[in-house]
Length: 426
Image 1 (tube, rainbow, N blue to C red):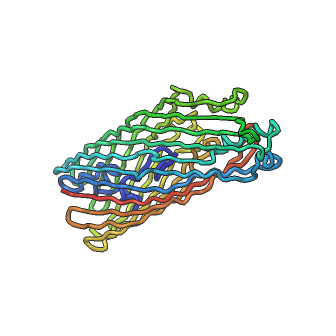
Image 2 (image 1 turned 90 degrees about the vertical axis):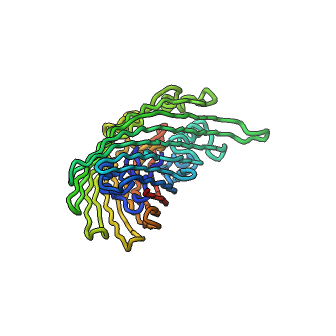
Image 3 (image 1 turned 30 degrees about the vertical axis):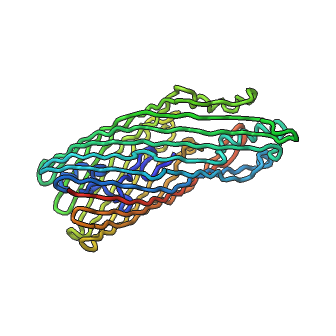
């Protein structure tokens, strides 16, 4: 499935301030409703609202490489199965807060996990290679039939969060909140093989999959903020959100019956009523912010740790990870004048991946991300944020096999995100 920034199941980019700076764990602005709820105790007095939209452009490709004699049997030696990820028309997020003296309340709503569809118009190796192998075993070379393979998956986790913040004294504040997570996804695809004849096409195989998934979970959230002059130190902890998602299977079929064994190993996970775990892991976020020049130039260093090893996944895949996701973020922000603020930031993400974790329909690649942008104070009440970030992924290769056919799979990703947001203070 798709994701924008953050862990294997969790997004961290909701507000455009993240896109243009990345490290926002020491923020006192409206985006602190997510990144630092305790920091709202030092934020704007009264009401403030923010609406943000982001447009991601992402590709998730699986390249299959076969040796001989399998390359000849399969009809290809190397082929890239291209997956295009989309989030139509854009990814929204809404923030709101109200502060009075020492306390504040805040709300946030957005896509907190994944957030889009990924489409493989030529299918993926885990379906295509077994079909090609079966045809070859029955004496049919790849040139003797037409293969139509297609795979599409969707995964959105919508989140609605509320928190209460209180400032104890001139240095300390804390916040407690709760977020509801709503899962909505599907898996759809087909593999159809037909052999052309003078009297028309003869169907050799017809495999169809159409499965919807919906569910709900909750996650408590705690936040702590320490402020000393120009120094800010924060901590935030999100508890694990348990998501146990049942299948609503519309279609799961393969014909003729003689090839039903082809999907035997895969069929149980797609059966109607079968539940799949998509837990959102616990997240620890620590940040240090400092104003190098008062009310002019500031920076933040941040660390994220996602406890993926204790977040249940389909088939207990979490146990194959070497460690939970770790991220290091850094961001700088400079006020050119009272109207224009510019910023830039970077993020390093290490997922602790292993060969056994990766699958065609759910894989990850370690990455570096960079972002930059600006904020414009149109009036004393209205601010516009604009940002862009891209992720530079490291390809992941592994040796595997389908129906005893050995091959090398290389997973690759690209990601570009443009964002625009409006903050308004009453």
